[in-house]
Image 1 (cartoon, rainbow, N blue to C red):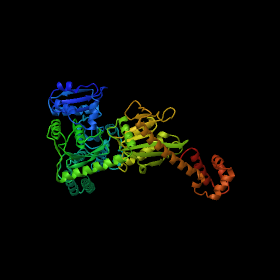
Image 2: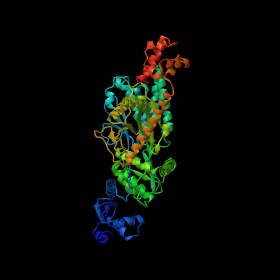
Image 3: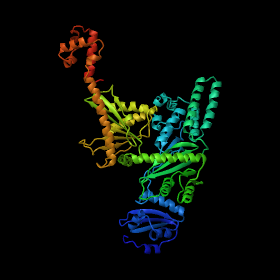
Length: 608
């Protein structure tokens, strides 16, 4: 016992509810707990048999601090705040404690905007959610663009447009920025969007059917056909996304635990619709019991955050009644915590358990080192959640010749090589890396904007602030938002470990320590993009150099090609010849000489 006298401490300890903090000799907090009776609870650590884990903790206690509260519910809330702030070694810690994202519908102006939102909800408008992650929000926003073309562009882009953007051209926006839709028609799309997000899709279908029939009676057959297609799309969405059964707002939570790792799977049901799910992997102390882990997760996850009317858990929780009471006070309404369920809820719970088990097996079998680096990257870039998709672009050429851009993709478990892409760059000044990067990003993210390719959480570009600005400009033109942009600039000596990171929205650069796991992951992604770009460039260059530039000219066969090279002594001298010189070669007309001259000059000037 490190100089701590438990008998003397317990003799003066109160029996009121409160929170206790166990400290070691260095003043570091070992454990935070709450109690209905502080004296009885703290005494139990010194008067009863303990598990090996708790024995090790008690042996390190040098002091105990307490905070008395009025009720046990207040103690629960304070315990949760202290665990998050102090991160004690022997508590279960929820490391990914970030707020959930929402879909935001702005409340200003006749043409409101639909957008991704995370953080404090201060802006005027409506917030729909919460969603389990950014991917679920992007999927829903993409879906809504197809169903109801409400604008999703930034207000600064909307106010300064003079012509419709790509989203209008592909039928994903109605063009309110340039007056291509009336306020009343736009308001109908907004109303349908709100009903859909509230889980009232059947009402949306009924409204669309009425409008379709009215258009048909008015002989507006094109409008009626568009409404018919809209109804069909909405029916397909209902079949794919809606959970059969009665509506309601609830979360379904299940835990799987093995090999010292726990996975907590949460499914979010809002208005009877499954908004998706997310897996959490809390840090566990040795010997943690599953029920205690789940109870700690529920407390840390929902105290201080929005909580639905019902939580379905896969086992009985310690202090379930107390948790429900605290959640009810926080929400201003009754909150139920249930674990014995039947019918449709039992099927939801079984599905959540299966997902927890599968995610745990994948976690245990995956590369632990990669996951740690991914965690470190999320913390270094202050990301709201672990990135599930990252893309990196690099440019490769030799003195401007045969420029190739690469795009490599990394996911939650490593590189996704089937998603790699190369872009042969054409129509730019040789050696202009900014133009090459812009062209590659335009070609790649036009497909993202059209919904053919999923959007990444993080986009890396090889270069400095200039390439970062180019990437920001391209994404802005395409109306894409919610992607974290990072430029990776090499150090002055180009030595690994000296890279400087430029993040969009930050004035100052970020330099990570050479030993940082986050930097190691960035280097791996950047180097893979570099390797892939160089390989593509070398293939393209080798292919060109195996061919004579004369082979692509109509009318120049093997005999004329051989004669031209013989007359001028090789390709280098031939490329310097004028039209009149070429006309002197037997069999070469003036028109053919002009074609040869233009073709060879184009190659010499760097055009591709």
